[in-house]
Image (cartoon, helix red, strand yellow):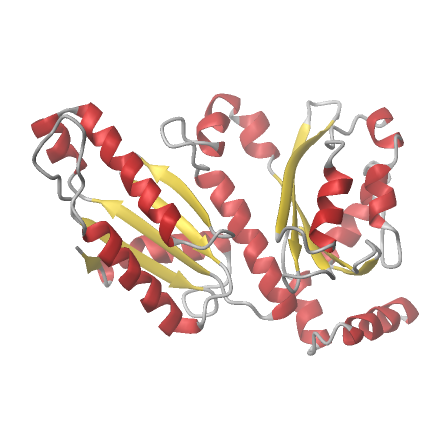
Length: 311
């Protein structure tokens, strides 16, 4: 109990407010989440972090709790001896976020186990966007690495556009939702479907379809903010996650920007006539359409047809 009281005192000094509610929200997440101060010392952890830290089989850097120096834990040479493939730049990446040099750092790492390697994604996000505390989250991604290794490459990155796949989008959505549990930021998910790609392929060929899709990707990336994540979900579907959205009005403003940029004609080299596309856009807002990653992604996809914004 003394540790919990101390934890709440430290969080109070961060002016986060609503300690009990925020701690409960963090505990409800299945991902391991911790908040560290500007020196890398752990201020608070959620239940998933505490359970993992309590296992005797957990790696040394994971066996950390409130008050521990997390930078020291990830910098130790003992990690490699324990079979942990955490990149050597992990410590410097965390420091760069704490120093305010970048808003986010992330890396994948592996843990050697008898049944095969376990894979994790670590994401470090600045709490205020400047020098100061950060949220550190670890997501277990072993299922797509071990259970279906042939599928994992496509899930992680799309070879045509270089975008993350659906699996990484879900991970990054979980990271954004974890941030909300700490500082009340709202997260929105947008799903964009291109409805007439097959018509374009029949009329102009698959090469033109690829060029159109690449240009759609470029326009989306130019529309979203630098910290937002654009991903490819399928042959004719893109999605992106926006953090710190200003409620339903903010969602509608983003939808209108998408309508404008995707409504412009596409000019493809070798084809003098412009190419037009029909697009459906669905959106889901954290706290309005759901609170879990899978539910929000499904709600955004369904919204393309239930309450679509068509171009």
